[in-house]
Amino acid sequence: MSLCVVGDFAWDVLIRTNNEVLKGGDSFGEVMLTPGGSGANVAVWARRCGLDTHFVGKVGRDRLGDLAREDLDREGVSHHFIQTDAHLTGSVAVFVDQTGERSMVSGRGADFFLLPQELPKSVINRTDYLFLSAWSFFTDPPRTAARFAAEIARASDTLISFDPASFQMIEEMGAATFWSYVKDLGIKVFLPNYEEGRVLTNLYEPSDIAAKLAEQLPGATIILKLDADGSLVQHDGTQTQIQPATNHLVDATGAGDSFAGAYLAHFAKHGSVLDAARFATRIAAWVIEHLGARPPADARLTRIIAAN
Image 1 (cartoon, rainbow, N blue to C red):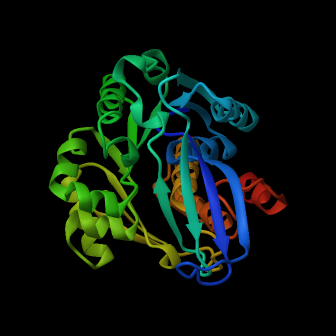
Image 2: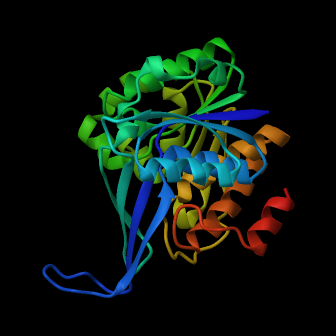
C-alpha cells in the first residue's frame, strides 16, 4: 500500500511565549525554524507510521527548497518537487500562546503556484491513497492542480482523503463556494476539526455536524476531531466516540496533520476505521505534548508506533 500527498511544503517560524504578548511590548520565548506545511506533515507522519509515502509539491529554487528535499529524504518520504525561480519556498509564522493554542499567518510561497501540467501523473496513478488539504483549494492556483490530482486518482480507483484545513478560510470563502469545489472530488475520508465542521454545516452539536457532513459526502467516513474530547467517527451510518489520549497541551501545531497521516497508515495496514482512529488519536496526543508539527521521535513514540 502507498500514499500520495499533493500539497504544501512550508517552513514554520514557530514563536512560543509563556506569557501574554502585549501590543508594543517585549517578551522572551522560543523562536524556532521547523519543517512544516500541512501536506508535508501528513506525508511525514504517514511514513513514520509505516506507510510508503510520496509527496508532490512546489518549492523555490533557493536554500529553503534544498532543505525541504533534505528534510523529506531524512524522513524517508519519496518527494517529487517542482522547483521554480519565480517564487520563494513557502513559510508560515506560527504563534503559540501560553495555553498551547496556535495561530498562523501563511505567506504565499511557491506551494501556492502548483499547476496541473506539473503533476507527476504516474506517481498519483500507482498509489492506493491520495491526500489533499483545503490549503490547496482556497486560491487558484493551486486549486485546479489539486482537483486534477483527484481526477487522476478517481480514474485509478484511489481512495481520496481530505482535510478542510481552516475554519477562517472557509468562512472567508463561504461554505457554499467551498462545497462547490470539493463535493465532486470523490472523497472517502473527511477529517475536519470541530470549528471547520461547524462552519461547513452551521450546526453546533458534534453528532449533528458529523451526520450532516455524511449527507454532504455520501459514502465517506467522517472523522470529526474534538481536541480535548477526542473525536467522533461517523462510518456506515453509525457514530462512535473516540476517547482522547491526553489533555496535556503544549503546542497544537500539526496535531490534525499527524492524525491524518497516522490514520491513513494504520487503515492501509489493517483496514479498521475505528482502530485507525484510536491509533491516530494516540499519535496526535504525543504531538501536542511537544513543540512543532513533527518533533523528533523519542522512545515513547517508537513504542506507540511499534504496538500498532
